[in-house]
Length: 127
Image (cartoon, rainbow, N blue to C red; front, top):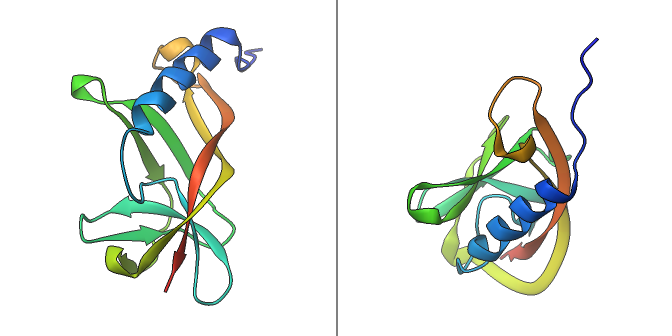
């Protein structure tokens, strides 16, 4: 029987390097949290440049934390999408909240190689 890999020191180093690059990006990013007008907290799931979409209020779906061409980091969401929120209606609360992400164990792609961890994410408020 196959055992899923567990998050280890090497995976931590991969996430730490990606997090350093990812935090160079200003403003709201896929994966960050937003306090909605209805009082719920959600995560941004897709970036349309002028606005961002969110996920269902229980943050269903998964966020892959990857490295793109040129060495930058990104998050990619798999799951349902809600309507777009214009960027101009977002206020950075200067707060952080831990959110779940996954990577491929030791950065080797393949089936059943996902490992999960928490990373600090920015928190915004919809106005």
